[in-house]
Length: 81
Image (cartoon, rainbow, N blue to C red; front, side, top):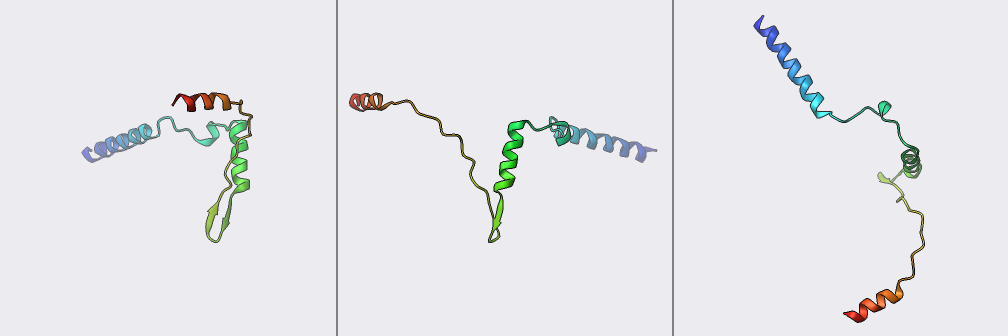
């Protein structure tokens, strides 16, 4: 009887340990990907390949946005030095 109770306590402690360790981690089915994450994952899979035993992935590029002209501000800062 004592051994059976000890085993039950050990199983309970082990289950409790793993519940604490996995706190906040949900299986993929319960955590659906957003559209943006889905697109990023698809781009990753499309750009992934193996060359000479090495894994190669193309770097993700952001859309180029225009910068405001700041030459005059930079020159002022340079003169103030």
